[in-house]
Each structure stands twice: as C-alpha cells, then as structure tokens.
Amino acid sequence: MQLESRAAMLDADGPGQSNARRADLLHRRNFLESPICRLPPEVFSRIISVSIIPIQYNQQNQPITIPTTKDLFRLGSVCSHWYHATRSDTQFWGTFALCDIDVTDESVPDYASLLRYYYKHVGTAGLSVWIYHIHVPSRPGNMLHQIFPIILEENAGKLRSFHVWDFYPPEHDYCIATSIFDYAQKDVQFTRLVELEFSWDWEIPAPPCSLFRNSPLLRTVSLDIPRHNMMFPWNRITTMKICRTNLEYALLLLSSHPHFTDFSFEQPFDYFKGSRTWFPKPHVLFDMQLTTKFGWRNSCRDESSRYDPWNTQLLFAHFRFPNLRQLDWCAPAPSNNPSTREFFASMQRLERLGFHPSARSSISQYFDIFKNLKTLDIKLGQEADFDR
Image (cartoon, rainbow, N blue to C red):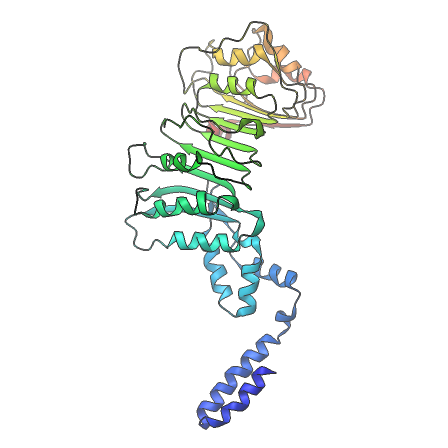
C-alpha cells in the first residue's frame, strides 16, 4: 500500500519525528480501511444526511440554509471520502437562501462566492433561490449587484425556482424588484425554471414586455403585490396565486386563461377600492373545465353588513367550476343572491372544502349540494383570526 511505502521512507528521520509521522500515516490508513468508509456510497450519503442540521423554516415558511451549509463544510473537512460524500449528493445543494442580511453587520459571509459554490454542486435538478429580509444596497459595487448576474445571467439555466420578498420603494437603494425587472426582461434562457414567487409592499411599474419569457417549464407564479401589472408567459402557467392586487384584475386574468388548474386569490378586508372597469356581458359564463383547485379569500371588514363586494358578485354570476376537487373559501356567500347557489351547484365533484364560517352568510348553507364531499377543514376562533 502507498502509505506503507511512505512509512518506510521515515527511517531517514530522527527516531521521535519518524515515530510521530509513522503513527499519523497508520492512523489515516486505518481510517480509510474502517467499515464506515467501505459502505456503499448511497448508504454513506444517507448517514451524512442525518448528521447535518436539516434546513429550518421560519414562521413565513422561508428556508434558513446557513446552518446546514456550515455542517456540510465541517463534515467535508474530515477527509477526502467525506468531502466527496457531501459534495456529490445534489440534495444538499438544492436550496440557497439570502436572508437577514444587514449592511452594518461585519460578519456577513461572502454570499457571491458561496452562491457560485452551490451552483457548482447543485447538479441537473437546479437551484431554488430565496431572498428576504435584505438590508443591503443593490446599487453597483454592492453585494446584491454582484449576486443578481450570477443567478439571472451566468446560471440562468440552473435556476429551478426564485422567491423574493422586498419591502422598499423603487427609489430606495435597497429596492430589489427593479433589479429583477432589469434581468427578467432580457433574452435569457431559464430552461429549468418551474416556479416564481414575488412579494413586495409597493406598487412598482413593470416593463411592458413579458418577464422570464424563455422559461419553457414555468408552471407556478405567486404574487403578493399591490396593483401589479406584470406580464409572464401565461400560456405555460397552470398554478396562479394572487394576493393584495386588484380583485377585478384577478377575475379578468382567470377568465382569460381557462387552462389554469390551480387558482387562488386573497384580498384582506377590501384592500383595494376602485371603480369598476371590467364589464362582461350579462349572460356570459366562463366554464373552467381544467381548474381542480380554487381559493377565494375576500373578507369584509363588517361581517354583519349587508354589503357584498361587487367583485364577488361577478364571480358568482360569470364563473363555473364543474371539475373542481378542492375549494378554500373565506368570503360571504349570500343566499339572497340568485347566482350563488348556481355557482356552488356547478362543483359536483368537490371532495375537499376549507372555509371560515361567516356571521352573516356562510357556505355551510350549501352543504347539501356537495354530494362527493369527503373532507371539511373548518377554521374557528383564533385560527381564523390569525389567518385574517
């Protein structure tokens, strides 16, 4: 063995030094011959996976990856065998989060180099990138200005999903959304991108062209943005989740894309108040044959009020979901509206219903319609208050 031949060369050293080096080499040989290092790679990889800290998630279900990354580097530094085990398994390198970063924190790691390292080991599955709670300027010369080209240009073909939360207005140095627009409208191929999730607190004008238009696998888009006017390659998207935007826009989007299989809208307490701009013909029905999951959460501030949002009345009057399997409902369902029962009656295949009982008019009065209902998820008291 090579280690034994190297041990024979130690005779030229002094007795003390020779013995120390011989002991070190024999220790390393014994380790390499230990049972754990002779395990099949799949088994050893499993041992490594249960030895590291799993990715943690905060209350907003956002990942925290730095502790896991530290564990991977610690285990990989034991020996070449462990290094190979931690780097060759792509499941360890599939999620990367930039979070809780403050420009005043001197201990912030070199995220640009770390991101490149992730892309080196991520494999063909692609990388999910999460950016939130960032307090670092995105202007030229700063960290974010270095990171966006790595994600959205150099490694665009390795991006699997992109999730961004931004709380700054467009004129602020910390604003992330404007930088994303600059890259997302370029003619770049996002060949593995399947999901986008954006959330920001300010109305930010979007470019007139479609964003991430060269994304043949893009299927899911989630937007928590006030009054957005962004465009995406809608014909490829099957799952659409919208929050805090113009409710009327949500209906228009739904009516224009009957291929959506999963659609949900959430508007807390009449968040948007504006004049009506969409006027479908009185007897037009949008038959959503492909939609199997639908969510509608549009609470009124005063649940005892007789007022119903005209937007919800448009939903009852013009949309039908004959193949719906799952419904999440948090809105008034007034029995005095003639189209309400017809709306729910179209859901003959409904199997799962989640709803929040209303003080005035609850969906529970239509239970007799759902003949195939198997699961009820009723939110009461503090749970419902927390969701609102």
